[in-house]
Image (cartoon, rainbow, N blue to C red; front, side, top):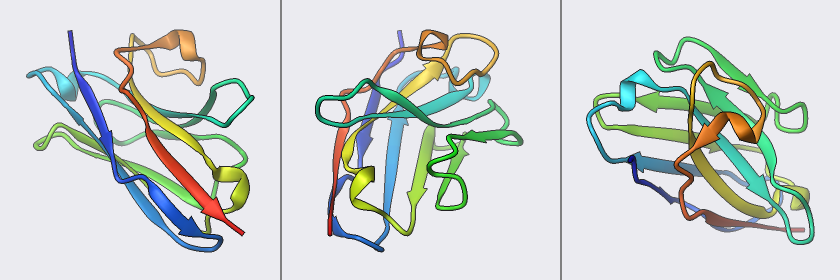
Length: 123
């Protein structure tokens, strides 16, 4: 079982930036793809970004492409989500999760969800 702990959320004005971190326990971090999802109030949780185990391949939701960047540091067992040009519609709880196998954009392809970190973007 892997434990994931997100951090870095907060309140920011529209147009601002935040960097989220997700720290993983265990020795197998570098063997798994990782993903970020988000859930806004009253909405379903949705895919944001994912990264392969090596970090060479990344995937993004259309709504964040060009503004968000996912990266990882396998030496630190950490995956990051750099969020720039934030919009009020980016307001949500952001979760990281571990890919079960081949990285997909579907939630069923991930397990070991973190507790989430709140991101609030004011207009």
